Image 1 (cartoon, helix red, strand yellow):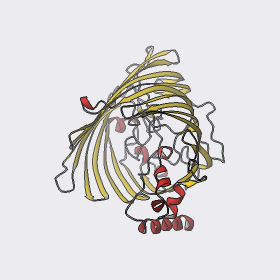
Image 2 (image 1 turned 60 degrees about the vertical axis):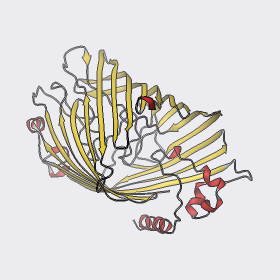
Image 3 (image 1 turned 90 degrees about the vertical axis):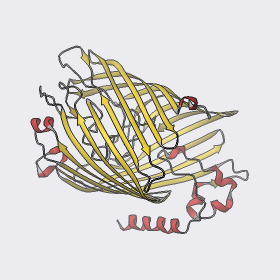
Image 4 (image 1 turned 180 degrees about the vertical axis):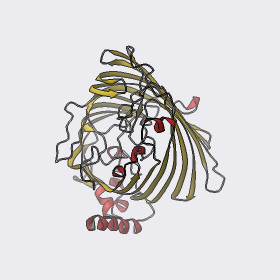
Length: 460
């Protein structure tokens, strides 16, 4: 811990002595960052030692350069009555951390290689999947780029992260220590009017040893999508298809191999300066064992910002519907599969997964200071189908239906606090209470779950 404390102090010193001119924002996908501006701005590059690490030229023309980066994310978590359990043995109080380091080598404007190491630790007696990973290669890919006038064509091959749209089906699992990556070939085309993706790959599994992450026996995924800047009709439009194939998947309906296809439509953007929206529809079909799949999801996420009021309050309402299975004894499966979404889709508490449920989720965000925000929220959950069960954030079946006819799962209150000291350091805290509804009370333990997670993120 002394080493980690020293690391934070070093970054604090760097940050306080930084000049006003800043680098581009640090992105959630570190491979998408571009620090080439430093190659033509020596005064900015030499301002700080960490700025020098972002662009290290290897030739006079600076066409060959290396960019280094990393992050350290410690977190302290406490859960009481996890998954509504009355057993005190289910209570958890632990420390976790994620360490990542990456190197981005640009050989020319047409070719680069990217590599990233990862380490995850949880202070529990037993390793936890996607949390515990002693040391491994998280990303390692080569990218070939061909600029054609105002359009960029990229071919990316190797182990890589993938985050598409709002992350409802493809996300990096940032809430846990071990982010998600794929062994994948991906073709990307982009310009000011549209961005297109074509990909085929396999998810990387995360054992807890040294350099043992593999894609063997993991689900396959493939797809194509296009996001167009349809400003004339208010916002942007995405259309996509994503395939999924797994050796075994477990639902309330049973365990079988699954091949599933998803077609989707997303509309998102701003209306004026105050209103922001995201609306998305998915339809799924395919095979689960001998059964035919027919499932769907609908999401609406709308926000109105009082930009002239004190604290600039942002009022939001989010509605989700993810279909469930109406009859275990027929030849169809109606349970929606969120594929590779973030287990923390509804917050770090990860109590409810985006399967067989619908919810109403009001929020209010207040900007208490320039870099300090607070979100107060409530989320009310119901089962979409009474003959289907309740699934957790990891897609595991938490409670089978067992012919229970109660629909209300319960409701969750939340408080989120975020403070961004600067681009390199942020602090956040999430607190939740989940009160059990009739379905939980009638199918097992129903104690109120309390969760608190305090996170520090330090990166460069």
